[in-house]
Image (cartoon, rainbow, N blue to C red; front, side):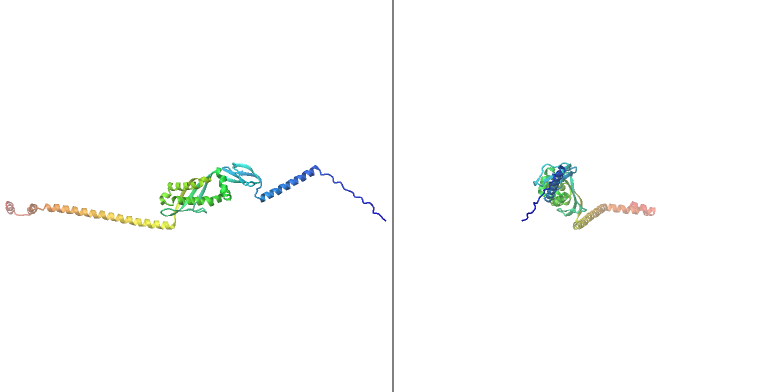
Amino acid sequence: MATNPRQTITLKHTPPLSPRTRTLGILGLVLLGGFLFLNLSLQRGGHMAGPTHIAPGNVGLVIDNYHGTIEKDLMPAGTHWQGIWETVIEVPTAQRTLSLTSTDPTGAVQVNTASNMLQADVSAQYRIDPDKADDLYRAYQDQFADLHQFEAVNLEPAVKGAINYAIGDMDTATALTTAGKQNALKTLNDEWGGRGVVFSNLMIRGIEQDQASKDLLSTTLSKMQEIDNARLALQQQGFDNQTLLQQAMAEATVNRLQNSTLTDLYVQDQELGQVRKLYLPSDQLMGLLNK
C-alpha cells in the first residue's frame, strides 16, 4: 500500500513595523477619530472651532451648547478662541437708533390724538445693558441673536404703542411738546428698562395729518375766518352807527343853540341892519332914524 509523501508547511516571517510606520498609523487613527468627532459635533449643533472677533463697543455672549448653559462672563472686544461646542453672539452695547419714518419700510407712526389723527416720524435711541444680555437671550433666543429681527419684532411695535398710549388723550399741540415725548419715553423704560433695554431719547418730528384731518382742518379754518369777518363787519357797522348818531346829536345841539338865540330883539336887530344898508334920501333917512 502506497503512502503520501510528507507535506512540509513553511511559515513566512513578517518583519516588525518600523517606528515611523507605527507613528503614521496612530496619527491616521487620531485624525480619523477627530474627523468623526467633528462631523458628529457639527451634526449635533456644534461649530467649527477657531478664532472669533468682537468689534469695539460690543461684547460676546457665550452659549455652551454641550451643557446647555449661558456663560456669565462676557467676551470683551478683541479676538478670542471659540470652542467647538460654543456659540458666540456679538451684542452691541453702544447706542443704537430706531427710525420710524415714512421713507422707511416700517413706516411712520400713526398717532391718534384727542383732536385728530397724525402720522409722525419718530426716532428712538436705546442701548442694551450688557449685564442683562444673558436674560434677553433666555427670553428671546434666536430673535435676540439677530438684533435687527429683535428690533423689528419687539422694539419697533413697543415704540409705536408707547407713543399712542402716552399722548393718545392729549390735544395735538400738547402731544408734540416735551411733555408728550417724556410720557412716551417713560412708558418705554417702564416696560423695557428692567429687561435690559434702556431708552435714552425719543424724537417726534415730521408731523403729517391724514387727508380727512386736512380737509376738516381746512373747512374749520374757512368757517372760523368767515365768523371773524362777520364779527368785524358787525363791529364796523356799530362804529358807523355810533358816528352817525354822534353827528346827528351834534347837529341837533347846534340847531337848538341857533334856535334859542333867535329872539324878537335879535330879529329886529337883523332887520334894522338890513334897513341901514338901503340907499335912501337923507331927509327920509333922518326921519326914519328919528322915529
